[in-house]
Image: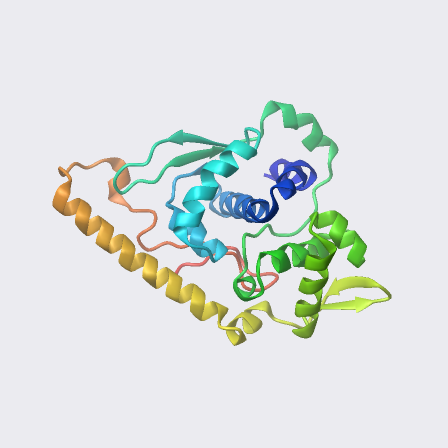
Length: 253
């Protein structure tokens, strides 16, 4: 898992940044996939697009488009190994390809949780999420130029995100270097900005959509039972990145 994170930050982030806005979404989706992998202690992703849509604050149709694109751009890290049918989603395997093994061993892992979109960034946006992460995970408090270099984002986009997060006292600048403001709760801020309500509404909407889909399948499909039908992994379980800095990255709603 640590090796995969090393490769993400050292290689894939730099490749995906060339894809512009889609690249930002792909970078966050890969973080969500790796965060799910670490939390669930699994090397397979066999949940529907709505699981990652809720984790990223995006529409499930967007995630359905991004997942195959991410598999193609991940250089063998994410690969589709099973076709979805009925109640069951496509299955993806996450692995460290042999051509990355030496590089992964040479890189030192940085402490810190890997996230898709923590709820507060539903309100502040994807760029702010990547900028905050660069400050949070940096070995040294970075300058604005350092954040631009680390994230691969434009200076204008980085500066806009820094101003917005500074206004909410999420970050602070000291002697030209940016640090995380320790006294600010991301959970409280997400609540103030309506992001928690937005996440709850999305999950509720997904449940209704899933119930309607299952009801349609019950009416139109020939009944048969497999071991996977004994528990629908998406019926009641939802995975969301943590709201605050140190909360566990799994919640049951």
